[in-house]
Length: 172
Length: 157
Image 1 (tube, chains in turn cyan, orange):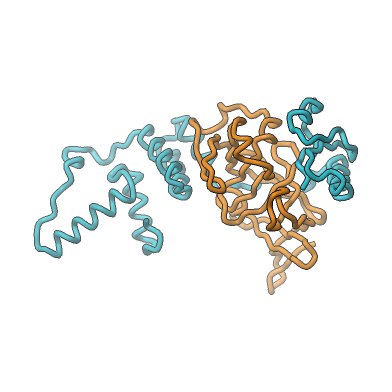
Image 2: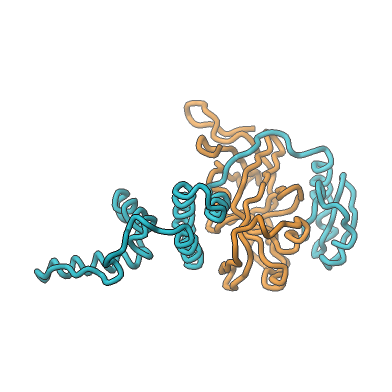
């Protein structure tokens, strides 16, 4: 709803929601439009009942977790991330908020360099060479050798003891 | 093998061949499919720059043996190809394998469907979405040679 707003207004909207002054973007926009309507008609702007007597500086961590849940349910991934990051900064000892921030944070590079072992490389080479022979099947490949192939993943999985360093894929 | 900016600074630092073919037997549109490693398991993943997160194939997910205590609390639903799928959000380690240059490992937001969602998921591989997954990766595609170039951005560490 706030896409297309100038950056300073978009920041203001997000901050107001984080501070608990509004439940959602829709809530804030509705109030803004009410003010504009009242301004245009020359009336004094009424205060929403929910704001009366409320200490706006207080918003519990659980409220923020709830707001993150709601944002995710609406598909607003950017807002969910923003709420999580702000909430985690504000409540550094709240485990769930910390977890939300960790999970939803922007991707972070942890390693640039060789991860691919000769075993993995050999398995990828095997798939490149043999995929046409196994179309429609799940394959498990280790060290460049086929461990098992089956149209059924469950059947394949019964032949896998340790999937680490194994290539497992459905061939198409 | 790397691509460079006009001033010679690197744009990408690695390259890998991709497979360009339908992601399932029923599909007719080809996808860019890469070999990736998710928490130690090598598998296939298709690129979806309009998508969210890293979406893990639910069958592959069973091999990861993830602890739900590591996920954000609660089941989430995503609309995936017109079907609502339930799963959990995790932070997982994902590696893009390079044929030339350096492999590239990063932490991604991963949606892991519940095991019961296997039928809804169908035969699709894992999916590399943009937000939460590829958004800190520089990448370029050469459709003539079917090479996927990739590297890090300055703010991806």
